[in-house]
Length: 132
Image 1 (cartoon, rainbow, N blue to C red):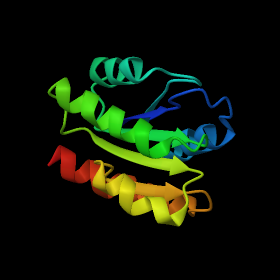
Image 2 (cartoon, rainbow, N blue to C red):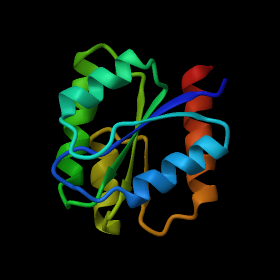
Image 3 (cartoon, rainbow, N blue to C red):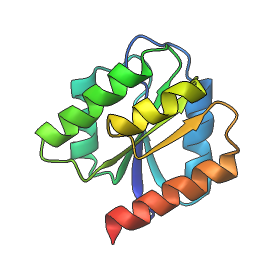
Image 4 (cartoon, one colour):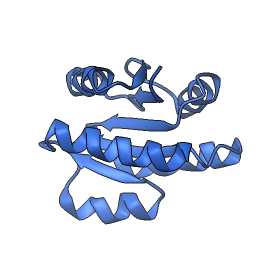
């Protein structure tokens, strides 16, 4: 059984093709993937992460609200005493916002166009650290 990861679509963004590709890619790489579906509330994402005992939460955000949504997820995980769960962000992320995302607590950022192999390598490195 592989490491459990959660792929989540926070906020009002209704496009999930990329998230489904990421979920399938991670599953094919040996991860056990839980996918939330679209338009998830922050509280629900955190609740699912805790219930499913995941090592990592991957947020797929195309709406432009990535910094605020990521900060809210990181803060909510910390408030739930689950700050050890890594949060990564992917989607339509301008290069100028990568540092902002890292500053609010994202462990890694995978903007649109990131090769899937790089995503798998990055997630594997983060979950190995978490599970160690």
